[in-house]
Image (cartoon, rainbow, N blue to C red; front, side):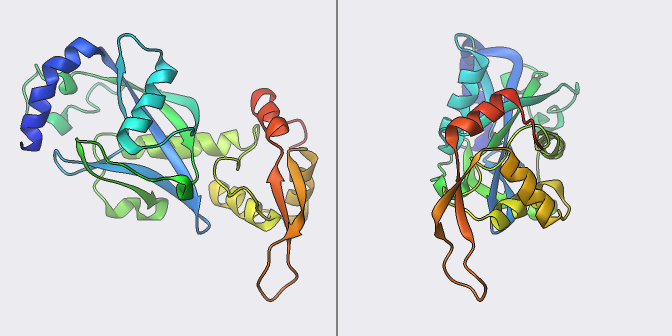
Length: 249
C-alpha cells in the first residue's frame, strides 16, 4: 500500500476515534556528546521529517494522549512532559496535504498543543510506527540539512526558547544526564541549552545551593587531570523544585 492510500484508508476511522481540529506535538530534547538532540520521525507520505505528534481520542485526557502518542510513535516511556505553547496558524498543515481534498481528516485545520519533553537518548530503543519510515535523534545543528514538514521547525525553535526560560526557574538534568555525572558535565548541559559560557565558580555555587544534588563517594576515572567527583540528583528534592520552583538560582 502506498503512503497516500494509507492516509485515505485511515481518514474515516480517525473521524470516529479522534477529536477534530486538535492535536499534540511533543518536542523531545536529548543530550549526548555535549550537544542537544531532538527526536523526529520521517513520514512515509512526502518523506518529510516531523515531530512524533498525533491526535487526541474522544475518550481520553490530553496528558494521557501525549503519553500514548510518544509510546506508539517512538517507543518512548516516562519522559518529562510539560505544555509550553499552542500553535494555531490557519494554514499550518494545509500545504503538506495538498494532494488530498478537504474531506481528509488529516487535512482539517488543527490547533496543536506543544509539549516540551526531556529524555536521555541512551535510554531509548526507538520504534517507528506504520506511518513512518524512520525515527531518530537528530542534533540541533543538523536540522538545517533535513526537510522538516508543516510548521514543526518553528515549534522546535519555540520549544528551545521555552527550555531556556524554564532553566532559570526549575531544575534541568534529571531526564537528560546519566544517573551519575560530574559538575563540569552538568555545567556543559546548561551552557548548551543557554547557548553561552557560564562562570564555573558562580555556576557551582548556585547549583549546590539548589539542594538537589547528592555528592557520591566516587570519582570519574580517566583523563590527565584530577578525577572529578561524581554527583547524582536527589530525586525527592528535585521533584519538589520542579513543583515549587527554585529559591536559590
